Image (cartoon, rainbow, N blue to C red; front, top):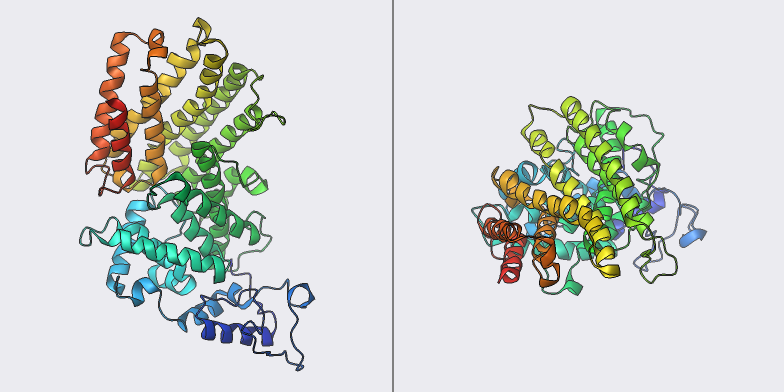
Length: 485
């Protein structure tokens, strides 16, 4: 990837790779599999049987599929992706779906470069990513209302095939990232694959060395874009890993490294950086702050879940609050000076700051509130956690989703995490209405919470947010409606 991999690992290895691709129907299944994968005993140029594993002299050399041109040839010799071969999606519809993806989904998840990732290039580079883009965008194709569910089954089948036989590539990591944020709802928690897909993306990205800075000097615009594509993918891997961990209480799987720490400088280095990279990096910086908070809170090696119940939650929270305010000031300056005011997507992305900032605040302050309540019940000094922080933060997120995202007509294209954040905040507000917290709120405050959540439920259930009955906002609307009764 990145235009740097041109080796084929030996002539005999390249021939074996092409033969395997023809015989097995893998999407570039020769990557790292070696010759004789079909048991045909094909040897190398000296007539000797080529060794497997570490005994193979070409073991650590790039395989044929690391060369984009050769990978294109291998994929061209394959049958088209099942989503196209089955006739489910025509080539004309594929172009329409890519347009929908870039216009509607990219404002939320800017992992692909429109210059590199055109319909034809993605088709040639990674049929798996091609299928996933079509499947994600198919939810928003008005002429085919029933397409999404079927297309997502093709995407899930492609994910399974890519895991077993596919090529480890940047595009494969990107495909798993998209599946982790735009998935199908599961009937049970144990059946949800979102976090699993994000983990696959991080493992592939780490295996490809995307976390290591490249010392390669770009030879052309396209080569430079390929190098930027690698770093952009790694930042998205980090963001998905940390945000998923925050939302679902899962352990993190990606370590903060030099690439993450230097992200603020990365998006300024090249004139070919995407205009959306500034917003991507801003979110990375916020997640770094929240990660440091979690490291301090989960610092007890003897606790089953690591939570340090003896730490000073208020002191840690106030320290982190100072960091978040500093982040806010930096982001305001960066967006005012480095975000394109003439790009509607950039304008929209700058409006997303209050959602992420206040959601992370609620997550942070809820630790102190929960700890105080379990220890002794909320005392006057703890009202700092309740009224000043938790309630304000939760209310700000819910209002922003309704009054900004829904009002702009773009909420329905948001990935699931936006509805998870809104649902968590609304559920927290409803939790404060329980009898045990009656002393914390007066009658007027309680009435305002009920009215706010009812309005939020109506928005989530409306066409402004939900495309169909199985869309995530519709499901959260049903859940919150049940909590209101």
